[in-house]
Image 1 (cartoon, rainbow, N blue to C red):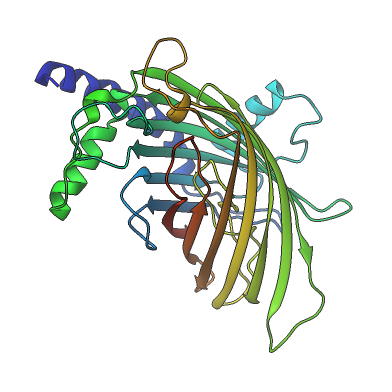
Image 2 (cartoon, rainbow, N blue to C red):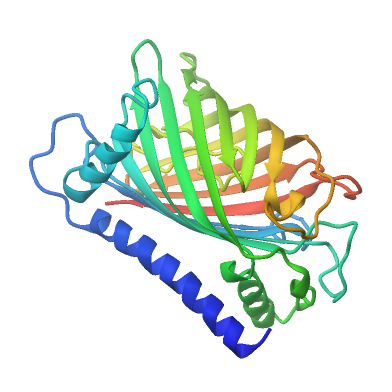
Length: 351
């Protein structure tokens, strides 16, 4: 990679990030006084890191993900309310009629073949690829005839060298003094990426308790539509613990089973353990199918993919949430040896 090309890619990526942060900046402003009663008047900041070397995995395939988000209070005002109302104007009346929060997202995901020491193209293994994106989400939590949670999220970004996957992985591997990735010259080409996610969850609380523990079960249905991902999904999560906060499990980086960016604990300390499962019917995965509009490295993907996850969540001082999740993912393409495994660390704070 020449210095000129590297500089241009950095400028393109920096411009995308700057634009996303400028759009999200008003969400961090102070909240006005006099909120409506029984309405959550605090936003939530989230940061999540996923890596295949945590939890007993190996350095391959989906190798790292970073996701940073800010979710507003319920019934936001000012800039946040304006954005939410504009998005609602574009949506059919049947989609998220109860939307009461808006979120802003920045993220990066990195994918590599198993042998990162090789410089030549590994035709039978998945391509090198990076995905950097910004996004906006609408959240709806409502209780008309049940306990429902809807999440509509739009991600726009870039797949390819401008996503800085090579730069990020090389920098981290140098810091850790481990094998440097040598095959990034074979990565997918630059392509504008778009994906629309929608998910609905239903929560069923258990009326029984054992040793002060309570439990709930939350099934979900979801979909993704775009040139990055297209799939349909179904799954669920079971939780058991003390003072289950008013969330739907910890967030996850898509694709995969995800909870909610917001949480509303009622005590200074709480915890729960959880287990979840999700299956997906995959129509498109650019990180396996390759570039959309030009030839690139690709592999034959599996049309059915499943995730199993287990983890623990701790809430502190009614304002912090800490979570660890271990994810086991089934084979995603023909010729893949064994399932993949990665860990996820999550931190949330309310203010």
